[in-house]
Image (cartoon, rainbow, N blue to C red; front, side, top):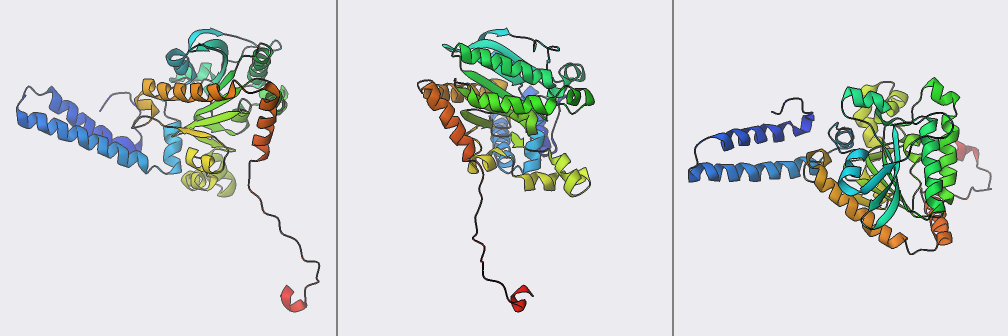
Amino acid sequence: MPEHQTILPFERPIFELEEKLRELEQQGDRSEATKQAIRNMQAEIQRLKREVFANLDPWDIVQVARHPERPQTLDYIELIFDDFMELHGDRAFRDDPAIITGLAKLDHHKVLLVGHQKGRNLKERTAYNFGMAHPEGYRKAIQKMQLAAKFQLPIICFIDTGGAYPGIGAEERGQAYCIAYNLREMSRLRTPILCVVLGEGGSGGALGIGVGDWIGMLEFSYYSVISPEGCAGILWKHAKYRDQAARALRFTARDLLEFEVIDEIIPEPLGGAHRDHRATATAVKSALLANLQKLSPLDRSQLVERRYERFRRMGVFEEHAQSKTPRTPAEVR
């Protein structure tokens, strides 16, 4: 098996077959029987991938969403956009590297790009604070979005965070206020906003750049008010119940499309986005271009109204008229 490569538990049978295939291909034997064995094994690997990834449970999806080799915002910038120019700082405290902002071109569209960045190895993850932004990150994001709205540039937000940073310093500098302020201001911006959940969509940290006219999710991402470990700790008093919490939270792309929280599921290549960055980026780019084409002609006032109505429609509730007739003692019992 490949060295220094993260292999998820349910992926192990696939990697074992791929290792056998590599050994077979490296043999000097080029007989017809060997060629047929290679073809059969390739077909079996494809079949196994389809079977495994078609039957992932919610906790499995969380593991895929957190995969260290999954493409992140900087990967998509390289694969999708042209002429990217990063914009730094919040004009108050410092530049927060956990949120990347900048101007770019998506084909012929000039856009503003905002996205979480986690990093891959320990050095990068420490530098990007594991994608957990501080208040200055959210201030930076909304300032750049307001600049984009001023010049009528569409905004693209890439969401990939376990949550906003919960440290004392972040709370002292107004973490909750900054996220709430972003929610309000994004709802008012008179320019198209497209959001994509790339991996993790964790709580207010995700929502702080997640108010959009169109919201898409990659097939094996999740979007949730709390992590499964956090939920398990609250409800069952131990993180070992995380798989049970993941099922209860109903936070997968399929669930959220059903609830109309998101608009579209973006398919991932067979085996997940971490297997093929370029194919994933192509799918994301196609979805962005298609929906930008639909949103761009809309009147700016109409955009804001549609955004308001979109969020008002979320959620399901029932109303029951309470009977004013007093209940008898027998009914009470």
